[in-house]
Figure 1 (tube, helix red, strand yellow):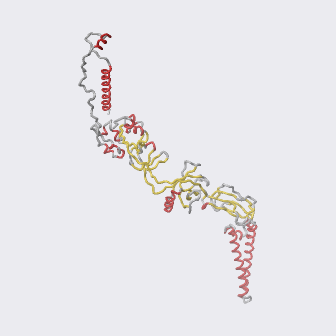
Figure 2 (spheres, one colour):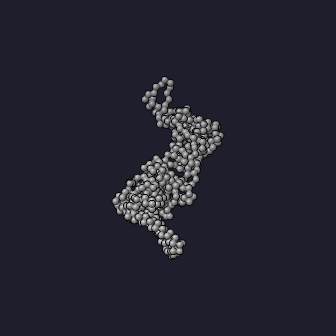
Figure 3 (tube, rainbow, N blue to C red):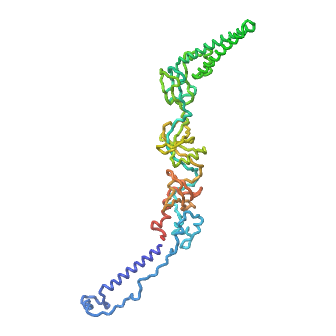
Length: 473
């Protein structure tokens, strides 16, 4: 290229000199002097009045319009063949020869045409590389939503009978264990049922004695069989009433042990109508609907208890993603992660369990329910969430930092280290970009050593022709 520039410059300079020379001959007064003769004004006047002999042009016959130009060593050089060097096997690039009749990879002027860069130790210190590794990647669907209680871990405690709240040793937010006393109700109905049971037990004992006496008289032919049958019927009726009363006490929430204590005359507190309400599950007090001294009716809600070690996330799925979600949900393998603004650095695993029967009319989105494990109880119902669901089986994909990927004329490429000082451009297909990482679809392989910092230095070398340097063809 430098030789070509030199030849063109020589031609332009020669044409300029020739033009100036001929311009002087045509537009200036010329005359001849003998050796040692000076030129005066008279002489000039005399020369003007006398005919002059034609001056012999020393350049006559000399053609200034042409000069031998060196042959362009790049003439006929096909550069289109280097358009796809980023996807050509490196071994094949090493076999190519350039117009200088040497291997292109060894030519300092033409090497860049192969997308190859030979660096110095100084440049090497400015580069950073990493070995390409594969990571598992799946298609992800993003969603937003809200956390709610899981109704399977939510209990509303009600009053089974009417009465007054005599004590409530818990407050909203307290942690309670299963079976722990959370309230006490004073109920006249409970007191009446307990005393009635004791009365019935006494009547049963009397009825059994009467039956035994009638049976004895009947055996001695003194009493009638009818009397025996009447005594037996009376006993059985009392036994049935006792059974019904015990079941009633059980419905009030008393255990078999408590009922037996009433029957044995030891349940003094229950006989006074004091009914203890216990927690059906382990959890936290979510709501309290009454206070000490408040009157309650049968089936009236007293408080709510919830276990938040497992919650439900309600996710809003876009209409375009519904088909993928429904298909994966039927397989039973739809899972993902959620995050919250409260704990932005934490990811919580979720598993989809069901989907609504229809779309929300206002948003045209499908709500899905996801189970969220919350063992440390950091999450709370009502929190807004953002999450992703994994669609399909995980596949291994190469991932690079965004700084490693360069672009030229719509093509993306990276540089791989081939040996200690030689680096090659490799065209790649970008599959996905997330934040500052890029998933590569194809173009490089596991184990390649990729330049992740300083790629722009190598890019400037292979694109030198576009910058006005190198071998411009």
